[in-house]
Image (cartoon, rainbow, N blue to C red; front, side, top):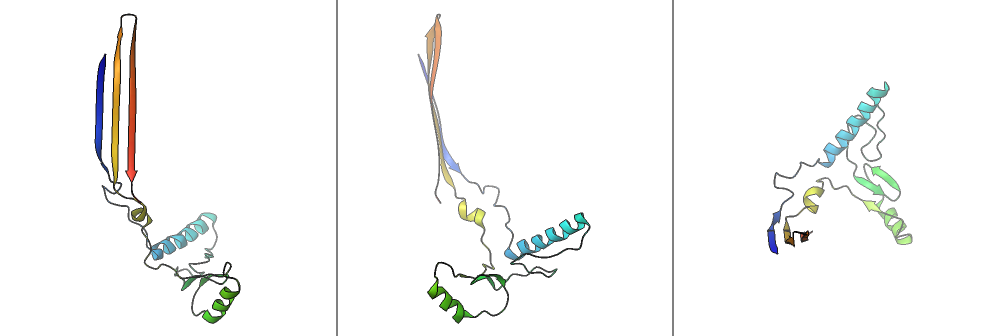
Length: 145
């Protein structure tokens, strides 16, 4: 009987070649408006900017509030006192959400360097009447989030 072992232990880094560049919120808004223009050009129509957060003008803008008590893409002042009162009456239904103007690099937030293990243990043998090979494989990849 012959016994074989092969093993590996190391680390895996999803960002070894650098993380992909993420768009800023303003760049995302701009590309969304470019998509409106491209769709209109393909259809032979005038571009209509109807995004609820990036505005209805040709130049995309970020709102002051993403959501304020039932309304989306609010620009300018809001009635904070009215929103507070509405929240006190229905806390599960009233929201006031400001945009994250700096943005979040979600790829960077969810990827981490992790441990990698691979092991195999094999048993082989036999006679002129028959042969056998039995192998046990173990793979492990642990990433902390």
